[in-house]
Length: 222
Ligand code: VGL
Ligand code: ZN
Image (cartoon, rainbow, N blue to C red; front, top):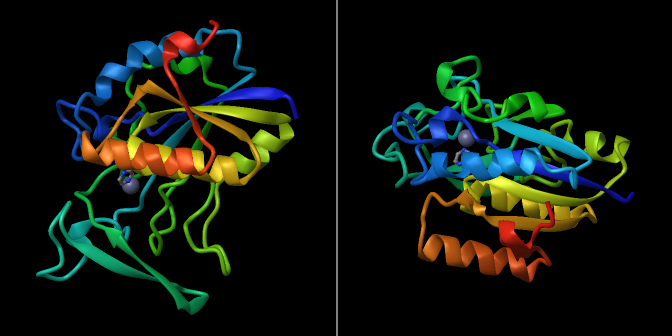
């Protein structure tokens, strides 16, 4: 299990200015660095993930009744459809990354030809799925992607995570990678947060407490 993977999280139009419905400030700025990483021989496997929601997804504020339907501000309770004892509150968002819409496309400046595999996530309308591995329920899980199987097949033991958004899908994906026993790095300058400043600092501290290491792109021998 010694191979190294680059995981590019949700570098999609809807998460990027100027037109994304859930644009992360500076999101498009990480594309040149990401393309440099994609060109590097140090990664044996290069994966991109896509947030890939049905139009009736639970994370869209507009799918909830007023007054708890304000994007960015409202939260909804998500109950495990297989186990009503398990639930969590989830932040609601503008409609974003609806399957087969232009907003769900990977940004066209990305060197897509160098990506070995694209993994879609967030298709189950009943649950939020920030992580590219699984939904947050554990008893039992409701949804999972093909990421874990793909990394195992390719004998990956170490992952570098980049992309959007640092405080949501990058964080959840890196945390699940670490939980799966993978040595996990986040390349700080190749990610941006929904809530920069405090959101970034809190997310970084939480990830570091789970054994995830932050590096700069200059730390990587390309
Ligand atoms: C994300 C909010 C909602 C992300 C996805 O990719 O970080 N954030 N869906
Ligand atoms: Zn989403």
